[in-house]
Length: 102
Image 1 (tube, rainbow, N blue to C red):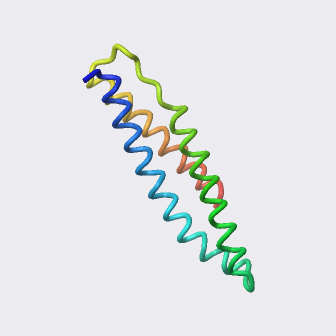
Image 2: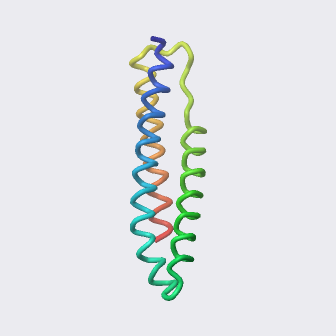
């Protein structure tokens, strides 16, 4: 298998798994907060929570895919190293955005 393909598969698998897990956590914990804000409108709180998670998923997956750049001639080790570096940038970016929103 081509080194770049290995890097793409590893990066995309890690990014999708991380983003899906974060989406579940944000929906679960954000829903509690929104129910407190929309005290007598539970349906509205659930709808807003789903919309926010959908926006998060679309934005974050798009950003993760924009970060993906691996040299076509890279060996599997170089491709994996590049994927891990890009995944680290994704993690730092998501952590920074989360911290700024707190």
